[in-house]
Each structure stands twice: as C-alpha cells, then as structure tokens.
Amino acid sequence: MAAFLLPKNLCQKIDSHLCKFWWGESLDPKDKKLHLIAWENLCKPKAEGGDGEFIDPWCDHWIPDIGTAKPKPNSIPDPTLKVADFIDQDTRTWNRQKLDLHFDQPSIERIVQIPLSSVHSRDRRAWDLTRDGVFTTKSAYMGLRGHRDLSADKLWKEIWRTKVPYRIQIFVWKCAKNAIPVRDILSKRMNIGDNLCPRCHREAETITHALITCPQVSRIWFLSRLNVRTDLFRDKTILDWLRYWLGINPYQLNVNLMENFPFVVCLMWAIWNSRNALIFSNKYESATSIINSASRMISQRHNLRIIPTNSSPQNQTILSYWSPPRSGWFKINTDGAWDPNTSKGGVGLVTRDSFGLFLSAAAMHINTYSAEEAEIRAIWTAMKQAMERKITALEIESDAKVVVEQLKRKNYCGAWNTDALLKDIEVWSLSFEKLSFNYVPRVCNRVAHELAQWGKNSTTDMFWGTPPVWLLPVLRGDQFLC
Ligand SMILES: [Zn+2]
Image 1 (cartoon, protein in one colour):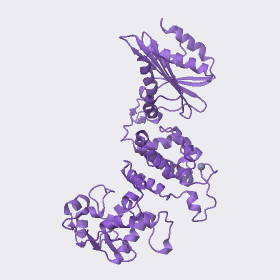
Image 2 (spheres, helix red, strand yellow; image 1 turned 135 degrees about the vertical axis):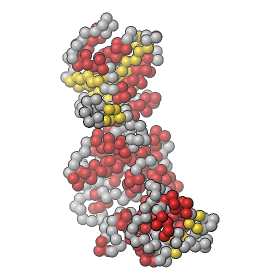
Image 3 (cartoon, protein in one colour; image 1 turned 90 degrees about the vertical axis):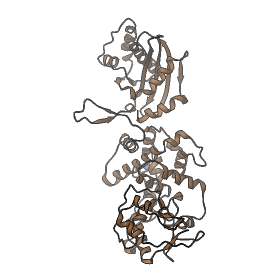
Image 4 (tube, protein in one colour; image 1 turned 180 degrees about the vertical axis):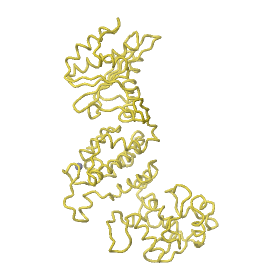
C-alpha cells in the first residue's frame, strides 16, 4: 500500500479548499458559515457518500506548491477516480499514462514530484489531517468508514451511478444526508422565525415536505408521468423515498420504478430550484413548467420526441406531449383502428381527469368499412359513455384531423356509413355544458391507439377501471412525454 507524507501546512490548505468547495468559506472562524454536512461524512469512501464529491477539488488542490491555481483536467473530471487510481500499485510510482489522460503537463510535473512511500500500511487508519497529517491513499477510503451498512452502500452507489448531471447527483446525496437548507433544518441552527414551508405555510419544511409531500409539490409528482401519490410518504424520510425507487430494503426491487429514478432525481432538483425561485426571486413556476424542466435534463437519454412546428417562423421546436384537460374537465382520448383486408376494426378510449388521473379505458371490436368510420365510431362511443357517466365538461381528443375539423365546424353530414353517427353526435353535443373536440398528433394519442389495436384483434369488448398491466408503460409514457 502506497503512502506519502504531506506537510502540515499543505493539509491545512487542503482542509481550507475543501471547506471552500463545500461551504464557501475559509477556516478562519470569523468567516464561519453553516456546515450542513459533517466533516466525517465528507471523508467517507464514495460508497458511503464521501470522497467522490470532493474528488475534483481534491485532485485540484492536493498538489504541493500549486497554491490555489487549479490544474486543468484534460478530460471531463471522472467523479469515480481516486488519487490511488493514479498510482501504479506494483511499482509504487505515479502512473504517467493515467496522469496524461487527466491532467495538463504543468500539473503532472508537480504531481510526479510527490514522493510515494513504499511502506505497506494496509491496516492503518489514515488521513487524519488535523492530527498527524499522514495520508495513505487507500486507507483514507477504507479506514475512516467504520461500520458498514450494506443497504446504505447500495443507495450511495446507485446515486452515483445515476446518469444525470453531476450537480444533481450531489444534490441527491445532500438530500440523503439531510443537508439541504430547508427551513426546518435552518431554524434549528439559527434564528429564522418559524420553520414553515414557504409554499403551503402549513407544515414544517423538512426535506421530505419540501421535495415530496407538500400538497403543492405532491400535485407536481402526480401530474408527472410518474403518476405517483406522494401522500404515502408523509411519515417517511427522504431515504425511504429514494429506497422506494431503487428497490432497496425494505422495498422490493421493481424495474419499472428503477428505470424512472433519473427522472425522479431531476424532478426533485427542479422542484428545489422552483422553491428557491419562489423564495428568493418571488417567481412562481407552474407544475407543467417544473416537470418540463426536469424532462429536459434527461431528454437525451429518454429520446424525447421533438416535433417541429410549421407555425413558428423561427423554426423553433416544441415538445409535444399529452396534457391533462382544463381544471374541472374530463378528457377522453379516442382512436379508431381498421384493417382493410378483414374489415375488422377497433375502438380505443381512455378517460383522464384534470390531474391526469386515469379513470377508465375501453377497447371494443367493431366491423367497419373505413378508417374514418372507425374514428367517428370512437368519438361517438366516447360521447355516449361520457353521457352515461354524467360528465358535463368534456374534451375529446383524436388524431383524425379531418374528422375533428369537421366537428369543430359543426358539420354533421356524413357518408352512408357515418351520417347516422354524426347526427347522434350533433344531438348529444347539446347535453354537455362544455364540450370541445381537439386534434392531437398521433404521438400524443398512444394510449387510445394501443386500446384500439387491442380491440381490433379481440373478440370481446373490454372495460377497465384500473389500467391493465400491458397498458402501463404507454400510459406512463403518455403522461408527459409522448
Ligand atoms: Zn408545504
């Protein structure tokens, strides 16, 4: 095991730089700011949430005689690298090749001058900066961590493995360490008046409340494509929340939940930013806007569909997604399927409310003579069902542009196979207080599309009050990203 000695004043400098990085302060007690993360946590191995966060500044400032100048990394700093990774453990020399990959030449010249000890110190407790100043690379990570909690290890590893921007990883790690300056934490350390949540002014602003369970935040989670009810986490900690998504003890591993983890942490970050914008800039951000900004953070990984609009002269792109109806309205997405070879057709309907909540779905088999007929039959069925359920404010969405435009013009004349349906629609329109027909691109109508296909290939009509399992992925995907 390699080790090398660092002068005490250098250790102080390192301490000072780490403090600056984490807390933006010097060691000077006059300049004391709030330390939300205990020093011991920062010194823990990465799996427990320690060294990875400061490895960049560590690498930036561990070189003697370089002062506060930062060595320029040659590549994007890899947060998983440790100082030990740059040391050839067999020869106990600096690995020039690896250094070349990561640092510029002036930095490397200084690094290779740091003497490496050939003394084995496997079991030695090390990096006790404030006392003897001895640093051994591996023991710094192994020695300080003490008792190991395997499920905690797993949580940290998953956080660092999540493919989101580095600053979001750090944010989540801080959340898990209870180190986010929410009012409940601040009020225990300084006089800030009350500890109430700045959004709802009703409950203490704990991290869980601020990011997950505040009624206003809860709504965001529910409207998002995760469609999750966060009130179940009211009495839980933020660790429980993270473990839930990652399937860590006591929660069961669920691949569907885990796949959403990057979005979950991006949304936590977006919610935190919106909370700060509200407090510090008095700027209110809508739920949709918060959700969209979280989506953008992971957009590359999730193949967000971006549809160019013709209407925009600047050739801007807009995100196209299913959206819930206006408050108090219901929305039924409809689709008709038709196979010209067999004359088999299908009708698909899905009803959701203004919270985006799934209410019901239907898939029916029909015999039909044209695609247009199938589409009109779908709208006809949607209206019929809405009336039976005493819905009075209804948005009907369809991807049949010609049909929707005809209905918007209140033209109810059809061909021999559609005229009767259109006449029904005309009469039924009068029984709604509010009714609108909307055209949406097919990518925003995928749930209804799936249901119509299902109906076409089936021999029985099906109704669901809770979504069938096979519909869940597309239903979730439809939530905010088509
Ligand atoms: Zn609140």
